[in-house]
Length: 160
Image (cartoon, rainbow, N blue to C red; front, side, top):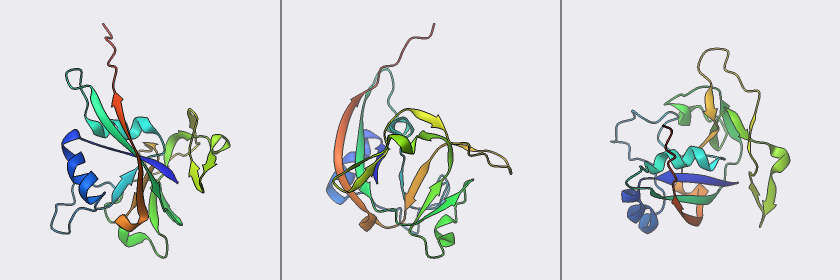
């Protein structure tokens, strides 16, 4: 599947020279909603948040990668130990309430490409908080093939 990844400008030298990597075991686990993995989204707006652009620094980079998800372990809520829950699955999908409709997906060079506006998925976590958007996590860099790097200019509108 062709999915989005966003990161701060300062991280791109390392990403482009070494690829997307999983945090090492000694790195603290805090901040990883679904464990230490490589995170992607099916909506550019979700990944754009990780560019940390501002009015003063309104340029960011977004990456489109072919991600070999295989069978996803679908979770309704964050679990920092998600990698240990795979049980024969190949990746984790955090299920969000907004996502592109599969009716708009296309296949390009053998990869599924999520397209179209956000639509309500009907996903609701009966136990509490529901994720706004889907998140896809793989735990091995070999599951990622970086394809397209886009330079984005963010337009921050004046609200008042």
